[in-house]
Length: 319
Image 1: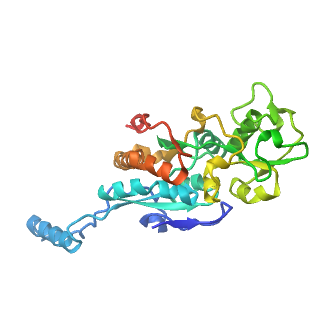
Image 2: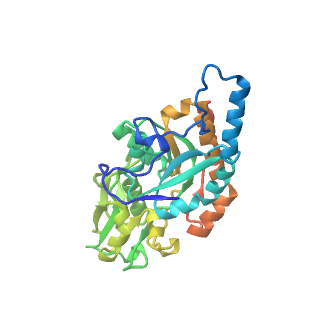
Image 3: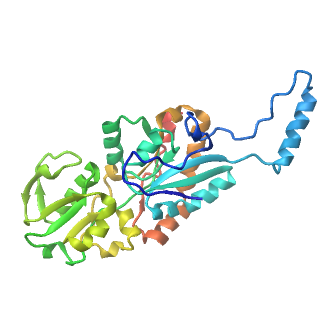
């Protein structure tokens, strides 16, 4: 069952969490969820205690309760990509529940505060900036995919048709905005300065090869704004959510081999120190990195999601 969060500010309370989230405890994955038998009276024998446990197990259908884990994602289609992993994990006794966020500013805060247990929505560059800006104690446990960051327009069919006076939108977060500027440079619209940082800003533009106005907007609203502007660089998950296709792009991103833009699966750093929780995370990563997930990439996104880093064992460093 999914829980959807549609909000744009960090102050709104996220409504999805683990069973323990109602109190002050962390919502990290439970290392075991077997219902415990009440402590027997001092006169209860070991045989009687064993019989009580057997009876309780029979009352529960003879099986343990699944381990519940909440996973934060951005965009409804991203949730669908986890469908195969969810089925695999259910057979392994893990109930993976998807929590959908509408904006990139939310999932890391939710994870750090214990409102979810794990998230998958960001690439390495975005993760690095978030940790530096907010002091989050978070750690990657696996890779997911890379999504091209392409240039789209409803008014022109190629970057060559973008003329002086045009308005071009880019995401307003530092990492996606910086990546978008690199796309505009590759498309021949601007020239960036030499020795720019990983995530350049508009201040790093050396020359406008076309006299455009760059408008920085929240990534989730750019597709809706496309009808009122001349072109935009749009995050892939929002492109799909608005019914657009990769083939609709007038210029395609060429930075797919850049590991800074490889997607991550992330958990709280403190949870990587717990071997039982680490085992759960390892199963989640393994269930995700399967051919069944690649099939969903192709089915849902037409190959727009490209698996990367699946041969890297990020969990080994925490063992």
